[in-house]
Image (tube, rainbow, N blue to C red; front, side, top):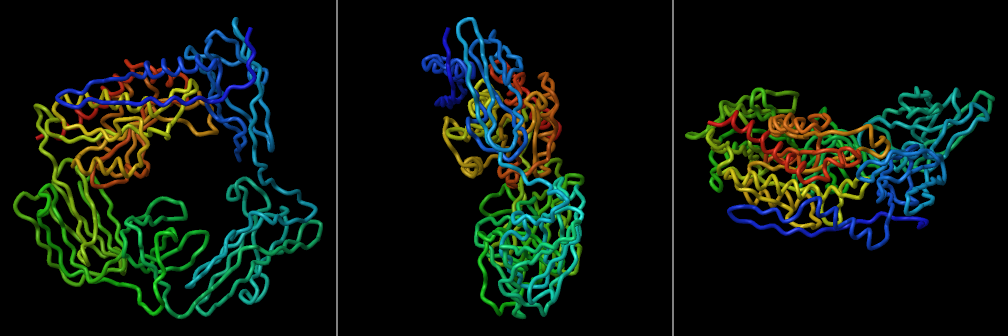
Length: 610
């Protein structure tokens, strides 16, 4: 009987080659890939492995899922003395409960041929806990602001600290507040479940100045003791009577509703915004008189003092067929200056709305393109004192891409013409890009057996490519080998091929804190509304495979937020779930998965065909 002390995760990388031509040939199967993985394990005498997490990993959460595998599916497995179900794949997933500090977990795998008795280790960072009511204390860590802040115009300063609950709290900023200001203890639902989180606010006046001062917190507790602490972060108010202006420098600067929050707009280089405050790698900015947002300090540069904030006038609008690519209609907006903008898509009715910030309409003169135009009409409205909105109504059944950019001070909204889709064969002459997610060093999700998402993705991508190619579609596969690729590379391959459709093909995994058996099923995702009809059409065909419903999901990812191609994401099933994982380990099921995507595409294309 063999006895093994510890086994670590093994990753097998399989190279792929593909044959292009009149037909596409499948050269590899997921079953062959997994068979090679088992052969490699056998050569290394690996009888058991924990595929996730890794031994001695560190977490800040109170529980984490695990995935594990044993070669003998008839083995009896105990984790911390509790018997676990072993699936026919050899997988046995479960959950670890994490106490603060080091945690040790025993694994006992007993087979007729071997016995494995080993210990697995994880570390949990001790969490911040609610202090007792007495004695009165203030925690040095977790004060807010956590970083030095620079204010360049009137704003509000919000401050927080954690201390003993049920106390009376105040704060001051020397030479600014003039004295102590009251703070309130937040309810637990606003304080991550903690008692004793106190918050206060100071409204900056346009005459205020402050140089490198800490926030002084004071707490008087139930024991009548008074405690004071100073923040490490410093407050600076630098008001010179002039505007603090910033200019975007990256090709794409993401402007967000909050730091690390959802994306509000995407701006090219050369757009000026007003800076309000800078802290923790973020600028709080104004894009118009009443609209504030956040932008990474790495994507902007500070402009010299003395300049005024740009307010643009719009003089005329005219549309024309793109002279470089007749597949696009350009709507040209003649502006006096470059200003922040936002493009929003609607599908009921088919419409694109364009917002210009810090802009007013000087003169209406709108010229429509003729002939061969799919623009029904254009309308405008002043949404705020300095926000001008243009609504472009389309007479198409489906939108196929849009983009907005500046050409000098001319803003160009480009809208892609619909391709000619025929009822007798809706795929004929359609250019479709297929992207097998992950690859190379990016494994993607890893099942309890060790099978990787990157391998499954490329196999079912290839099956789908075969089906589309046979129906006359021009198929572009972005990743044809087990190679590491950046997301931008994948999108550029599709752009250079002039693809009208981009299918991002993945499989899913649950988060760290969910039990692997809790989450399963199939789903589709989209960001812009032009992708929704395709995602919605494919989804029921995925459900016909017998997979559980996970849903049609609206979500922002780098790939799906690209606008000039119709993009949607397919998440076949959950590799973290042992039942879904076994489904994905069979070539016949991957062929069915590919066919479901194909049939969903065909269904919708027939609905919008001429």
